Image (cartoon, rainbow, N blue to C red; front, side, top):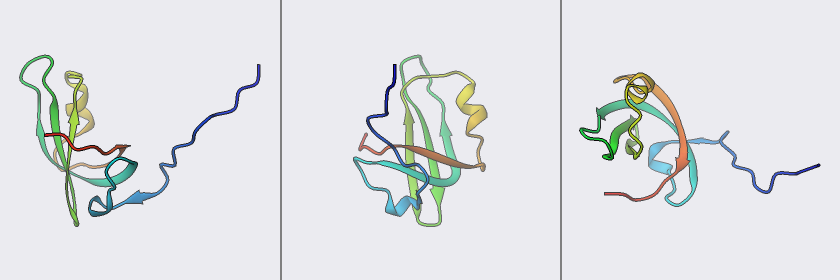
Length: 88
């Protein structure tokens, strides 16, 4: 069988946090400013990424134990990619 991909997500273009566009897949780089671990199973873990142009809150809905703490230590520079949506 021969299958071709139907879509392509270009993650090579890195934008500043101020230039992130809601509703689209964006790739940005920043420093981990805050890390708030979920207190109970089912609650989201919240991380704040910061660069010279602003802050970007990141919410992980699936509590993955120590994995997120190891991947996002405070002060570490990280590149993240995903669909940006408004969430309170």
